[in-house]
Length: 130
Image (cartoon, rainbow, N blue to C red; front, top):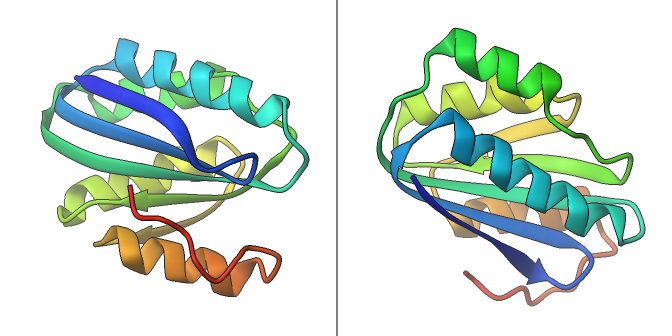
C-alpha cells in the first residue's frame, strides 16, 4: 500500500491517504507518522484516514493486533474514516474504536470535513480538500 501522511489543516487535522493494496506494515508506519504529528500539537487533533485502497491484504485479526499495539496520541480528537467501500468503512471504524478514538465513517471527504466542523466548532469554516 502506498500511503501519505500530512496536515490537512496545520496542527488540527492529520490527513492519511491510503492507496494500492493495504498491508499491516503500512498501517503501522502511517500510524506512527500520524501520532508523531499529533504529539507535537495541542489537543484536540483530528485525523482523517482516506481509504482509497484497491484491496486490503490485512485480516481482521491482524488489524486488531496492529491497533492494540500501535502508538497512540493523547491529543487525538475524532478519527474519521473515508471510503466508498462499506467494508472498508466498517474495518476503519472498528480499528479506530480499538485505538481508543471517537470514530465516524463517511463515504466522501467533504462529508468527513463537514462532520468535523460540526463536532469541533473551533475549526475554521474553510478547510481545503486534500
